[in-house]
Picture 1 (spheres, rainbow, N blue to C red):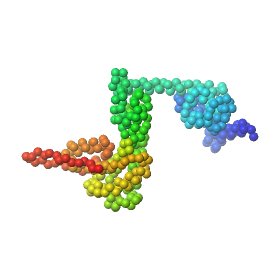
Picture 2 (cartoon, one colour; picture 1 turned 120 degrees about the vertical axis):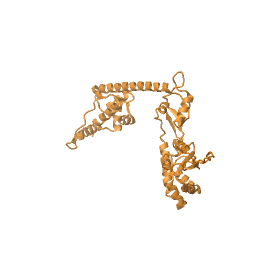
Picture 3 (cartoon, rainbow, N blue to C red; picture 1 turned 135 degrees about the vertical axis):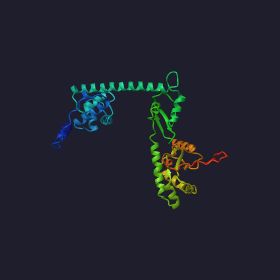
Picture 4 (cartoon, rainbow, N blue to C red; picture 1 turned 90 degrees about the vertical axis):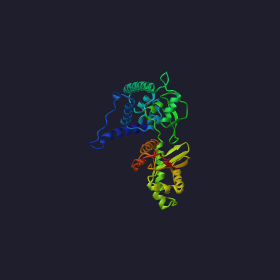
Amino acid sequence: MDVDEVTRLWHAAYRGSLGGRGASRIREPEPRPDLVKDLRGLCVALEELRQASGAPSFRLMERIARDSGKDLSRSTACRIAHGQEPASTDTLDAFLVACRVPPRDRTAWFDAWLRAQRQRLRREEEGRAELSALESVVADTSRGQVSQETAVRMLRKAGFDALERYRRFDAPWSVECLQCAATLRIRLSDVVLARATCPDCPKLTEHVREAWAELLTNPSGLLSRQLVRALRAATVLQARLQRDHLDVPVFVADRATLVTLQSSDAWHLVLEDALRRHVRRPFYMDVLLVHDYDTLPSPRNGHRHRRLAKAAGLVDGPVEALLPVQKPKRGNDTPWSPKPTSNSGA
């Protein structure tokens, strides 16, 4: 049979199937371009148009457009169908031709495209005005802009290190995460709005906890039962990877567990072996044992060290369940003086 005749029959069969699969199945109405207000709505309407025209394959759409003298690749048709707006009216025209839209009906789609573009420009202008106002609030220069030194300081406070010179408040900036050493591009405006986050940090913590769970199973059989019980009584906290140095803090709640873990380094090697199977980058591992604070000389210092430990990310929960710090006794004649103590061991 003729290819065009087969295509026509295919489209007719598809349109008939929309209302022919059971009595409850009702055919979707034709998309209305006059109701489109923004680019997202335009993309949804164009995909509905493609479905209503028989859902032709992207290869077929490319061939139909080429036969009509239009330029539409199958990849461009796929991107438009999946939510990317047409880059120009020529691309939109080719897509409409591939969907077999008559010339008299294409004007409404062109008007919808222009209307959506105007809406996008208005939103961009409003966004630039908001960013300019925000920059003037945090600016440290007479021109109402953020200087290089202030930008770097704000960036480091957010947990990133600059890999290139600061250019503009809303310009992409190549940075490195101080937590996991991942490289990414962020904007200083996102840093100010607290929207700049590293996508790799949660993955690093997840990989470390997976390796810790593997350690507790003692796969190599090199760890004694006493050591495995001590490891199960401990809690691995949020890891930190700076450049190629991986710090793994481990919270220990009691003295007996601390002594057991400090008496042997065999579990360090087993943990490092498990980490190298989960963390796919070279590193040097350092295990930090964070233990209790019941030896602090005063409750005031105890609360202060708890706050510092939580702010550093080393302790986030178990410290609150510790025994309260005992208030030291003072003699009647001799003033009490604190003795230096150690709060953590490695």
